[in-house]
Image 1 (spheres, rainbow, N blue to C red):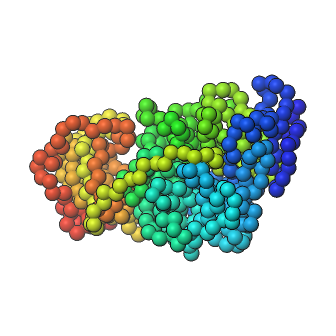
Image 2 (image 1 turned 135 degrees about the vertical axis):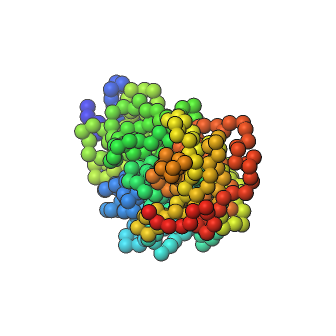
Image 3 (image 1 turned 90 degrees about the vertical axis):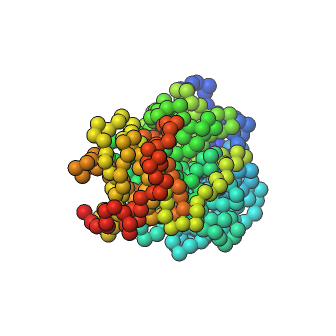
Length: 468
């Protein structure tokens, strides 16, 4: 019997749900009765064309339209049939409402909508002069999303009050920044190009709800180029692990490991956005070998076979989310001050994942991004013998560090950009050490010498502004 030999129903775009097949471990079928009894409702996006990386290039992910579907009791039906297009479902923490990107008419811009799962009409939450995509619930009555701008998609948050008030920008670099998840600690998991703000390889990063503390999830960045080397579509599971796609396969980050770990899943081309069921099984979007479309499957980690749940011969089925209540993430209290600058304290710039630098850096040069990506020097500061330095930089602007030896030669430099928020006071353990590294229990030498940061805002640094 073939994978599509039996069909429970074909509704609204021919989304099919697998019914009973022979009880063989090699058959990937799921009876309707077991779907109804074992699974809560699942919402997903059905699209004739799905370009998973298009958002990271500022382009349309669904160039031929998209439709949110809800699968429950063995039937797949449109979630919001009154809208021309819909995608990017995010279920509220109480499991009673869905936030999503939608269009009333096909020619409209993407806006942010919500609908109650108990019934009723969709409500327009937020609209703009440009596309708004990938909305997600945050604690405290707020949402995070990506807004298309002249320099790409930027991260923003806003209040869910019908008018989208209290808009807060989270990203401060040119480039494209697409939210993936809101972690239980309150941070936003997002994807962008690596190096951040400068590269084209998909990678995942974290930022707090006020735009501070931006960093890589892990620093074992993939080497090479192309889709098969990048990371995208991360989701946090009940274990705390972040599961994502690395090319066509699944992988994960876990707090116990400093590096990415592979997920031993059945063969297939995974489209990301794995969703976790209450019993620990995953709903995944996968294109099996020999197939032409992404379908939905249920898989128990550690087993050798998936059970196909839904497919459509004309559309890819992606972005699955489970309709269930979940833990509300921590609400991040902002520690930003009413300043135009931010303070940056490095505890040991000699330290990195690859070990200590052989040559001791004497100074750090701070740069910003000028016209056409040109690096502009803002100033320099001394690096103490223990590798510590303390600088004050302009907030909400692209920044990067370059370590120099006593002769002014480059010892190590960042190839991408980051930002410090206005009013942020930030401490890093070392250069590219990774977030799993804890600081040493000692006072850095720079603070024993002075508690006043060196001004590298471009106005008062020890080296004046200029280009290179």
